[in-house]
Every structure is written in C-alpha cells, then in structure tokens.
Image (cartoon, rainbow, N blue to C red; front, top):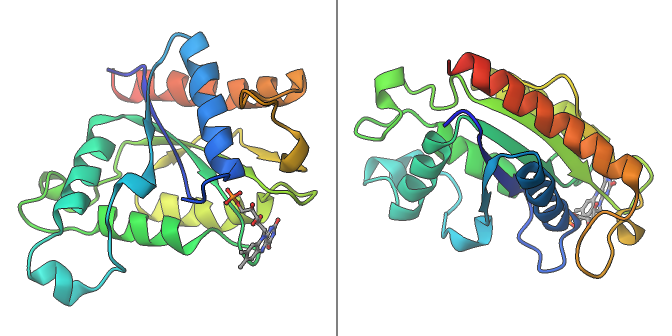
Length: 194
Ligand code: FNR
C-alpha cells in the first residue's frame, strides 16, 4: 500500500549508528501511521557484483532482496559515510538490485527496478557533518535508477551521543527532522501510486 515504508541502513556493523537511525526512523514512521518494514542487509548473503556470476543465475538472496524492494513503494535509506561517500555495501546492494535481469521481478519495467520508488535519505556519523557528503553521492545514484528523491533529508551529526539506551533519538529536533523526511516520502508515494 502507499503508506508502507521500507527502511534500511547501509551498514551491517553491530553497533551501527545508521542501523540505530533506521530503527528510530521505523518507530517514528509507525507513530505517523505507516506500516514499516525494517530491512537488515546482514540477513542477505550477497556477493560483490559480477556480471558473470549473475549470468549463471541471480543469487537467491538477491532475488529475495529485489522482491522486498519491489513490494515497497517508499524507502528510507540510512547512509553511513566512508571517505566522503556512501558505503561499498550500499553500492553493491543497489547495483545488484537495479540490474536488469530477465526473469526477475523488475524486468517488466525494462530493468529500471527503482522506477516510481520514492526515497528519503538520512545519514549518521560520529562526525559533525553527519555523513551529509554520502548523501550528495547517493542522490545521483538513486536518480539514475529512476527513484523520486524527497527534497528533505537529514544528516545526524555526533551520532555517538544522539541515541538513548533504548535506541530512541534523544533530541526532539532530531526526531522532527526524521519525521519531516518520513512525511514527505509517504506523501509523495501516496500520490505517485494513486
Ligand atoms: C569512516 N568514517 C567517516 N565519517 C565521516 O563522517 N566522514 C568520512 O568521510 C568517513 N570516512 C570513513 C572511512 C572509512 C573507511 C571508515 C571505516 C569510516 C567514520 C564513519 O562515519 C563511522 O565509522 C560510522 O560509525 C560508520 O557508520 P555506522 O557503521 O556506524 O552506521
């Protein structure tokens, strides 16, 4: 349904700030009335993309991932920042998922598996900029895959002190920023999928 939201983080680290942000975002979106799926990329065994590998048959976990992405009209991605950009995990995941392979659920759309998806970008980093630069690289990647990006985004700086022990965002201003992104994503996906 248009109000179903998929949230995932571009890190599989146990204590990942972006995973915490994904969990906090899911809670905020549920409060906003959305039905939320939290996707954990560590639950998927996905090799580094190689077209030869794909030609032998898309790995089962890639198909499973594609189907989940496919089922959700709206996504929020929590992007860590490595060297001023997004993570290899995120790139690898998006490359596999967007690859136009016949027989996969996206083929009917000419391989543009992200066509019509509404995506909100969040990021978190222990640094002051909150991983903002990862978003400036992630945006063109998503647009190239034909996503509709929410104009609002949020970068959570000093992430080491942003969450309480239960994983909630401590500051109201942070919760409001996340909520604003969630609201835009849900608003746009409701209209795009009307
Ligand atoms: C980083 N980190 C980092 N942080 C940042 O704000 N800007 C940056 O350019 C980088 N660069 C960078 C490169 C590499 C190779 C690593 C391993 C780390 C720090 C990074 O934000 C920190 O490790 C976060 O905790 C990663 O996100 P998760 O795993 O907590 O979600």
